[in-house]
Image 1 (tube, one colour):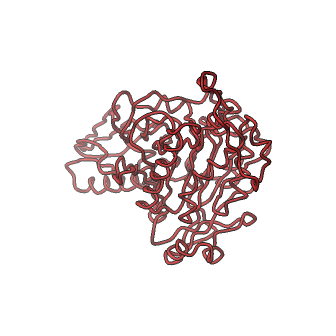
Image 2 (tube, helix red, strand yellow; image 1 turned 30 degrees about the horizontal axis):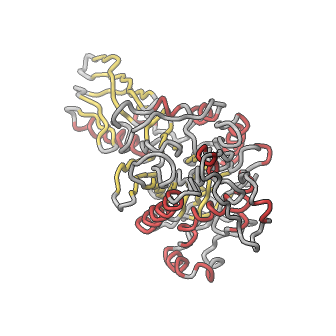
Image 3 (cartoon, one colour; image 1 turned 135 degrees about the horizontal axis):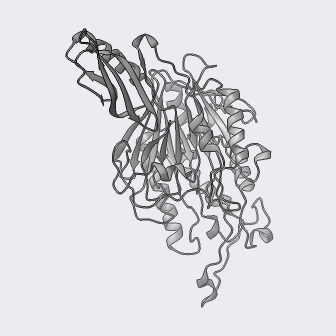
Amino acid sequence: MPSVCWLLPSVTQVMIAKLFYLLLISAVALPTKAEEGCHQLRSTAPFKIALFADLHFGEDAWTHWGPLQDVKSVKVMSSVLDDETPDFVIYLGDVITANNIAIKNASLYWDQAVSPTRARGIPWASVFGNHDDAAFVWPIEWFSSPGIPEIRCRVANSSCSGEEECRFEGTQRLGLMKNEIERNMLSYSRYGPKELWPSISNYVLQLLSSDNPKSPVAFLYFLDSGGGSYPEIISSAQAEWFRQKALEMNPDSRVPEIIFWHIPSRAYKKAAPWFSIHQPCVGSINKERVATQEAEMGIMKLLVERPSAKSIPMGLGNLVRGVLIDVEHSHLNQSSSGEVEVEAEAIFVGLNLSIRGLWRNFQSLKLSGGKLHLLTKCDGIHREANQAAHVAASLGIKRAIFVGHNHGLDWCCPYEKLWLCFARHTGYGGYGNWDRGARIVEITEQPFSVKSWIRMEDGSVHSEVVLSP
């Protein structure tokens, strides 16, 4: 399956497009479905993505409460979109609660969920969650008085027959994706390879350099983590598809890869903070246990073991990888000249750091403000320490995973060579009374960085974290 990428216009064109999108769609270079266009980053602005997770449209659709929650969810998305003005939106699964949608009209609720984004002319992509094509569950209360509520079918000019729609059956993944792709020019969602069925929505998008349209700045991968009509899992076939696609598009791992799926992998449980959220994790709510996929079939092992290609000038006499958290000295050797050879093993975010070099009166080694500092009594050595600091700051974890599913979690935690992040519960459907919001991901090309924060419905911002310096 070919990758999908897109071309972002200049700042002026973006402003015009938001006012006259229908007239200027070709002028702003948003590709048609047949094109393999690419979003080209603006040199003057970062690329901003809003993640909408767990909207749960259509929940309790037969009650007064259900439709009211959908209205409130639209307000959350509208507030975030107006405050952040993102370049792109990702619907991170559980867009609808299909197990509460009694008839085959789930696409109506899906359309309602994407309407705030579509109305603002913002392109988007989606990935499936476990509720999006879950089988209809008959409510027990329907079997008491007054019985089953009246089912309202679509009007006669509907694309589907009334007889078919009044059956108690849901809309499957293929039907939902078909509706989104065919009816929305702004959607960059894809079915994915047929051989990965029953999973749908496995695809990759590209962000291209503002200086070189043929040079990717980041790859955005989307994977269906299952649930609903089949087990909650990322299969070995999906992992192999990712491996082959990454080798094809990013063979030396030089380009950062950002991955989106709905249900957390089991690694999230290992990375999760205990009780309160503390460094190196960043977030505001940690109110439930991680509900993971049913099994690991290779995707996490593949992501952890996938190498990072950035090298370090060996003239510094240092080997630095990852983000420093703490340091333990393994041994010190003092020469007759008074020089001290330090070999230190540092505790990393899942990695080890080895630093070998000669310093006089070595005092301490720490991370401050994202830079590595070696405190010494010698000015010359301090300059070398600053060089090492700049090297460390130029490196970062090159992959991040974003999931939804758990409404009571919104943290980002490091794990091995990855950042594992939850989005923020956006919709008023679904469980939990925590305040609603959305995770924002911002990608800057020069100098490259990936930052993230939470934008709340009330406009406040918190939990900012630099995922790749």
